[in-house]
Image (cartoon, rainbow, N blue to C red; front, top):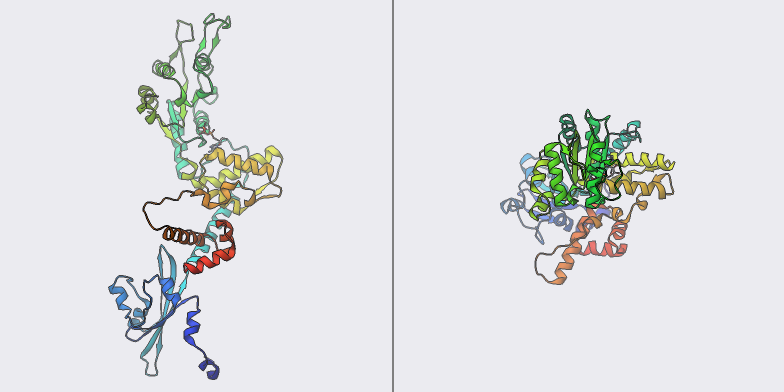
Length: 459
Ligand SMILES: Nc1ncnc2c1ncn2[C@@H]1O[C@H](COP(=O)(O)OP(=O)(O)OP(=O)(O)O)[C@@H](O)[C@H]1O
């Protein structure tokens, strides 16, 4: 090593170490601490004001550590490097022996460096790569508008499709459940398309959209003279129109108890009677019922007939929410982008940042909400690439996904404020690199962020 001894003599090494961002610790040949800087305590989260004079074995004895690099150096007489990860982040610790002229270890110098940021950046890079791969995969022709099979990349949704296809083979009646917008309509269609009935009609009825008497006459039809104003020849209902095919009864949870009783009879006898008629008509129709309501709760509340529920529940498909199958978000987004590009004669593209943001959001409105977001962006955006700034407000800010703050105890207000500030800043540091960005996200100015980070000794 080349050095200029004159100038080095003037250096205050303590001062240099103290201002160092990395942690530095020097121990003697017995493991006693000779010196360390504040960064060492901050990065290792050791709850001491000073370690000087303490033997590093003490840390193991007091269970602050299981493996101490500087002690390993004393045993192995060679440099040792190790990484430690916990809820506070990841650090890399490198310890090096310094030998005296007799070849004995004089001191061990240890450096501690924070890796959290690097680990986070690596994860982000991997995520970006994944998104890029997906982007190219799902931007191909097969995800163009001609795609008529439900988009399903996730294991969960593929499992749902297999179940649906199996049920389609046996033409059993099915109950589809799941939150609003998860794709119950789409799955009902898929079941029909997978069945041997696919050439016959698929008829969908929204039971909640019609008043009870109209719903019955629509479904069962009526005979001539059934009521004033009835057509002379009578009118076949949708059950008859769906002969040989599929009848999809959406929002079954919103029907009256008397309608439920009639439907149960139809399921059991496979016959219907037109209103005002005496003679029953045999029907050969696969019934698919769907609801986003909790029928079991409704039964408890006396709002849904348990006998109809048990009849329908023999084959039930619960369609998972979009937040439970995040792998489908990118393929669905690409699909909708192509769909609306064609529809509105646009050539928009989704940027990686937008895709990443879409995968992070919780989608309470499920696929319908995603579809609406993409449609709006395709129509409203100015540039070729849809950018994060064009996303709706709720999707732009991560923190809006976790808006509730729950306090479970009683404590001094100032302590609570400081503790909350500290936790929010720690969370923000995990996601954002720049203090300016943190200021923007937290709604405070940049200098306040810097001041608070210093105050809480956060980095
Ligand atoms: N797997 C999918 N692939 C492509 N588009 C889908 C898929 N699932 C749902 N969609 C689209 O999402 C929107 C909502 O789906 P759908 O109407 O089937 O939901 P739902 O569960 O029946 O909702 P609700 O309970 O409110 O009636 C529709 O535009 C549909 O085309």
